[in-house]
Image (cartoon, rainbow, N blue to C red; front, side):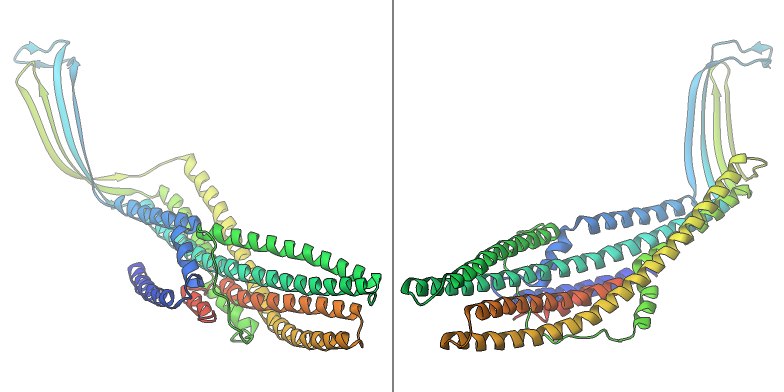
Length: 443
């Protein structure tokens, strides 16, 4: 079953990289799209690499537990001096200092060992748990790439807004200063324009810092310099599909890798309890042995070959009962971890669902507000030019327009990220979603 799963994964991975190369060839020259960024992250992410190594270790753990049920072969040899007591061969007594040589070859095959069977079961559950951990970190990497990629675009959009706002305030400041020199202006207008200009300069510095921070976050994920990124086209907001929170919660309970991991760890803890209980069970093994004893004082060369069944039954060991109690307590603790993980997954899914719904309304209202602010700015600018509107009116609508632009860009990129957050909360975020996000970028 596990082999078929990895075969399917390999087929999908090949398809994904085919699509990847296609999008790379179609991307804008000099600008990276999100598929390229994800490729860089996939190749260099230490968290996913660590979990993959741990998964390889869990596979080795299964092989180790399975090998314990197979045969073992050992060779023992010894040579030295000693004494034989009360041995008389043809009236010849062996004295102290007699040399001996001894070897034995021992083959052991467990016939029935309940502990080792339970250990194999526990190792398989540990492997399943680690496989779910790998799946979770893959999804988290996709989410981190999406958040970082659109985080950079959002910061850059806000920087452009700040630059545009500064240019408008600078233009008005120059106008008011020129009017003041010709006697047509007033000091209040100049001071008001200068104050808005200074604030705008501060906003631009803050926006530039935000861009640098966003790029640093992206570089932390890809371990490559953050270059120009391909921006998004204008999109229409989309509600969750299906638009029912219960459906998404049910999907989370069935697909969230953290829940799968917790369930597998619980099964492993039960298998450990079973293993400890089976320490009271008898162990049946087949043993084959070949031995030889040579004594150099007399021509004695004793060779023995035998095959027999051994039965081992522990009569009393106080540690066994304590190990059972310990493993039972750990199993109960793991059960509570599963309950907590399920509760958290449900909460995360509900929160992500509601955030996505809210982001749809926010994007729509932000677009309406932006159109309204743009119209108001143009009307006020014309009114200021013909003298029907004051400088304060113009400065105010410029500020309103800048805020509307910021709100729109924030709503736009938050809505895109919210789509990924909902899928990640449910546990169905995949590399196909990277291709889907790439499709909304400019070609």
